[in-house]
Image (cartoon, rainbow, N blue to C red; front, top):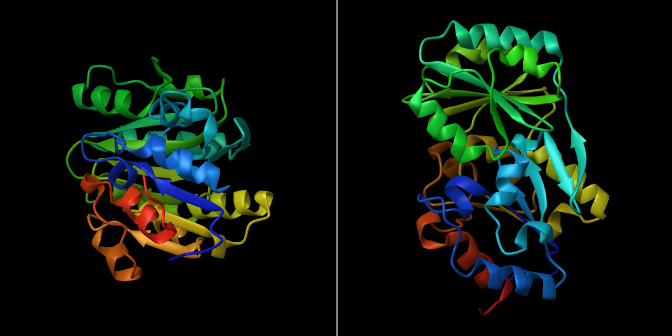
Length: 270
């Protein structure tokens, strides 16, 4: 059993949420139990901040902190702490590459909203509405970018991001962060951006050491997050590379693995 845990951070999709994008039924009760012990919960995701909040109904959204956009935005005590804005020259170059890669579409993620320009692509619209609570369809995403602080570009491919959009974007990896974040998604951000960097900064602000932090993840964009925590847990349904890197299992996302692991490790009875 773990002692002196003060922070628990969890990825959302494939980790805390099941495959139907549902929270564990007992998550509100878990949040109550963690607060009683003085443990802060951090929601970490490649999702937009406003979208993550929307997944936490009934007042829960105000009771947690956030690592959003794969670490490009952090929110603590309901205030935006950091937005890692991308240079417009890089934004334009990436958008040009995406536009010229068949089957790939870009969503520009800003501090205030997300922007896309392919409203006639049904699969893109479906997935975009799933992950973005604030989303605008515009004629030209580069024109829209000039009105906001763009901190991430999410590139969508409906069938095989790992073998289509990811290789197309790898040339930017010499000076940008290019992260495979799901079956359909590749995220491009500033080079220092990661969920792990964001977690390290939040722990510093809280004056809490990594050894007092538990972390849960399932995909390649969670590697740095898990490395930044003293107690990393990988889901049974995780990408094979994560299962090779980390020993402790967080159970399966479809069986409330995060919740059950927290209760087991901290001796919580719900």
